[in-house]
Image 1 (cartoon, rainbow, N blue to C red):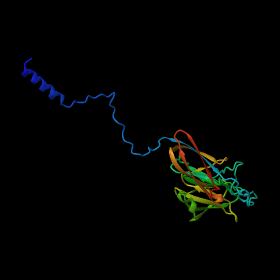
Image 2: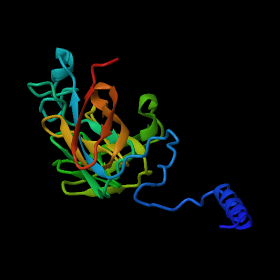
Image 3: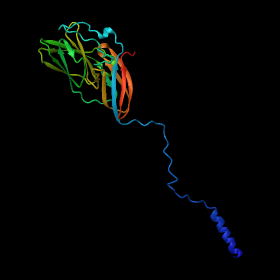
Image 4: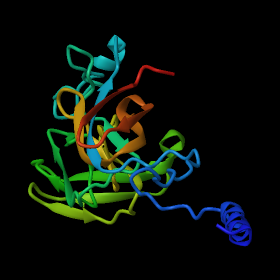
Length: 250
């Protein structure tokens, strides 16, 4: 090999060795890094069922006793009629964010000088008579469901019920809370909620289906005893979440 050719070859090798190498893509060994986590917790999705138990342990005897008799000589209803395990039936239950089907018409009947049911909910109200004499029922708006702890009597109207079987439809405002009263000197009372509410059943419980997953405020209102209980529950999708609202809590 000539000295000139050997020098040219050495120069070519030196130049080639100094050039940067182009990286070769290899998906099997070079996966993209995961996206950065911004610290936010993803919102829960789906829906579950919420079982609400309304409870009042050791209800005072005075609240459980009948306060006397009606003009029909029937016992007046006590403020609260707890179960043997202190469950409270007949309480209005409110679950924040829970969708409710249109409850439609609520029918309150005056019979034996008392109104039944004592607590009802719906989008409209009808008062009917089962009395054997003419009677009157007064209706007073107390406020709205957003302010159950600050209800105050407002305007009052009177409904005449001339004969048994007579029924009168009452105009109500959505979200309104109303008190109904008989025409006795010591009237029997009932309450109606024109909004998204439920009423605890005989065992003091109610199950609300299809509640969106996540945290929800829960309230239970027992108007006859002027009790309002508050709590919260975190609903888990596709599961039953229990919560107890204690009316004895301060």
